[in-house]
Length: 137
Image (tube, rainbow, N blue to C red; front, side, top):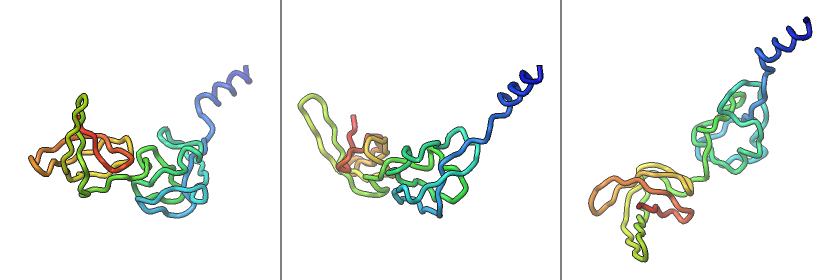
């Protein structure tokens, strides 16, 4: 009976988990390397438990030591900066139309980004490519 109570207490109060954090303050826009990372004993649902999942990602916000790195705090390396002039690509069948647009946010390859078509001033959402273009369909 005592063993059962002990096991139930363990299940009700999980042991503190380790989350990935940074050794020193890291500014937004900096790519994370293995030298930047360590562990902290914090409980978080949206954090990383394995530093290999964070290496190579870019800090989207300033990161501070002792605070767990959350999924929303990091992202793919930026290929499109805010206010950059980018090519807008519209493809349908064999037809490709290319226009210029202004990026209204930052994005990594494969991420959605809002852009303003400079010809019509219309706001569109497209997917950033590795080359810095935006595919709009």
